[in-house]
Length: 193
Image (cartoon, rainbow, N blue to C red; front, side, top):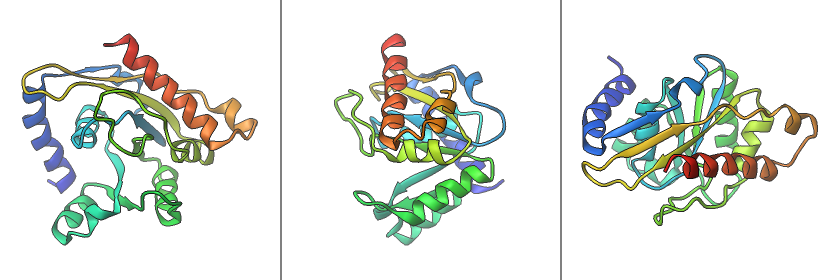
């Protein structure tokens, strides 16, 4: 068993009963081809929660600081995470993310870039729009509806893929595309509370 499968199994065993996770719309995630799953960000547990509730193995970007610890960085790399420098344009991370999609894998993004501890959905950064425009990936919005409290229900909702054809043809800006993605996440959050 590889480390990704082991991690997914252990997180499933721990988190599903602890947070009474309910998943809605899992069938909206395409079974194959490049996919970008864009979720709101309310907790450090969001990446493993999206990872265990998705039908696909997901590659996540993680802040570069986490990789400075050799042990943690080694584990993160083996569970499909790769570093990104926050607050600046990180060409290596952008290339790596595009490579993940070119290889027809799933890329997990938290467009807000940081946790919104108040549970509100913040403004997304242009990175999600960049990946959406530069690839032929399906864009699947995801809303995590908390809070993370022991034995209280946590809902993870996957929406239908967003059609990017018009945005790609019009050569829309990355920020405009990110704003559209964030609006879809807000709607999922609002409808499913």
